[in-house]
Amino acid sequence: MSSLTSPPTPPTSRSPRRRLIVLGAIGLSLVLAVLGYRFYWLGRPLGHGPAGPSVPREAFERVWSERKVVLLGFGDSVTAGYGATPGHSFFDRLVANPADEFADMRGLSLSAVLPKLEAKNLGLSGSTSLEHLEFVLPRVPTFDDDTFGVIVLTTGGNDVIHNYGRTPPREGAMYGATLEQAQPWIANFEERLETMLNRLREHFPGGCHFFLANIYDPTDEDGDTLNAGLPRWPEGLRVHKAYNDVIARCAARREDVELIDIQREFLGHGIHCRQFWHRHYRSADPTYWYFDNLEDPHDRGYDAIRRMLLIEMSRVLPKQLAP
Figure 1 (tube, one colour):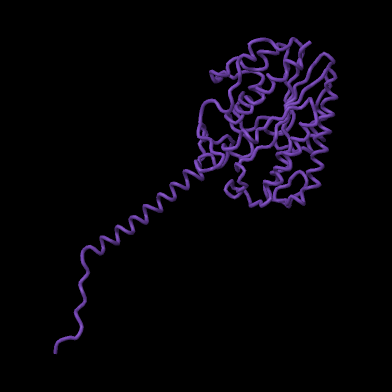
Figure 2: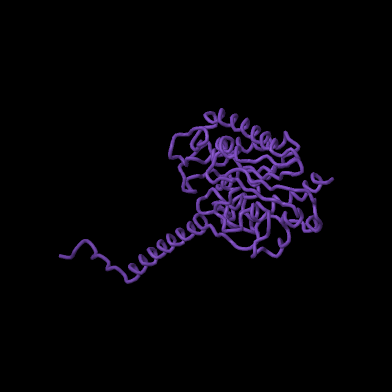
C-alpha cells in the first residue's frame, strides 16, 4: 500500500549556511554595539595641546603696575591644583609659564606684568565652604597698606558633591539631597560666601579684587550621575544650579568681584565629550578636561581656567592698579 503522506524533504545544504550568516550578523551587531558604547560612552580622550580661549597678547606687552601685588589662592582642590602635574595648576601658570609652555602663552603670566608680584596659595584639597570660613580664613595674613591683593577663589563644589552618596545628605555633604531639603544649606552658603569676601577684603587695607569661579558639571548638564560612576541623584542639577546662582548673585552685588564662568567653559568636556549628537558637543576639541577623580581638572582643564582668569585680569587689573 502506498503511503498517503510524502516523505520529509531532506534539508538543503543552504540551511546551515543561512543560520551561520544570521548568527554572524547578530554577533557582529553585538560587537559593534559594545565597541560603540565603549567609544561614545566610556571613551574619554584627554587630548593634547592648548585648551580654552585665546589670551590677547597685547595686554601683556607692558607692565601693569610697579606696586606690590599679592596673588592669593583661596578655596578647595581646584585652587590647590589637585590633579595637575607639577607647575601646571592654574595658580602656578598664572604666576609664571612652565618650561613646556604652549607657544601662544609664552610670556603671558602675571609675573611678566607685575614685577613685584608675590604668590601665596592657601587652597586646601577636599575642603568645603564651611572649612574655608573656619580653618582657611584664619591662615590669611594681613598685608601692608602698599600691597594690592588679587584673590582667586573656588568654593562650594565639595559642599555639593560630598559624600558621593555614601552618607545621608547634610550641610557640607549634600549629595542626594532634594532641592527643598537643601534650601537652608544653600541660604547658609550665600551668607558664608559674603562673610568670606568681606573678611578677606579686611586683610588687604591697600585694596583687592576677587576672581570668583563657579562650579562646573562633569555630566555636561545631563545629571546622569550613574554614567559618571556615582549613585543616582534626581535633583542634583537643581542643587548644583542653586549653588551657582548664589555665586553669581554675590559677584553681581559687588564691584570688586569678577565671576569666572568655568561651568560654561567646561560644558562639552565632561563624560559626554565624544557624543557628537550631544547639545554641548565641542567639535573643535571633543576631549575630557577632568582628572581621574571626576571632580578636579587635569592639566588641560587647568590651562583653560588659567586662560579665563588671565583674560579677566588683563581687562580689570591695569585700571585697578593705575596710580
